[in-house]
Length: 74
Image 1 (spheres, rainbow, N blue to C red):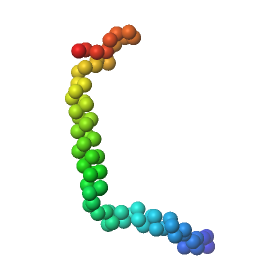
Image 2 (image 1 turned 90 degrees about the vertical axis):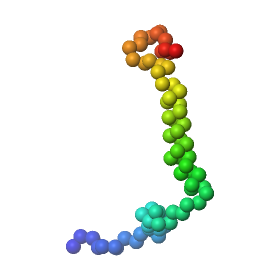
Image 3 (image 1 turned 90 degrees about the horizontal axis):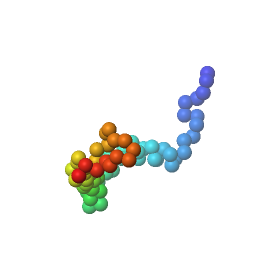
Image 4 (image 1 turned 180 degrees about the vertical axis):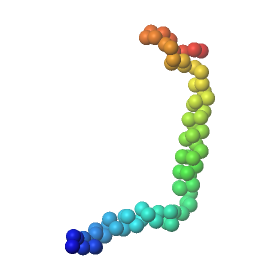
């Protein structure tokens, strides 16, 4: 009664993109570039944030301060 299945023609480019998006893991290959990017985002960036966090630990106290009070505790 209402509507026909597959009566709408799909854009071939969108179909190709959708299939690529679903099957991306099948086409992934480890190359020097992907290895480097993985290392940077998995190890280097968190290590940098961890280092910055340990270097500034306890230097500023934000709780219980009024306007004009210094926040530095060192």
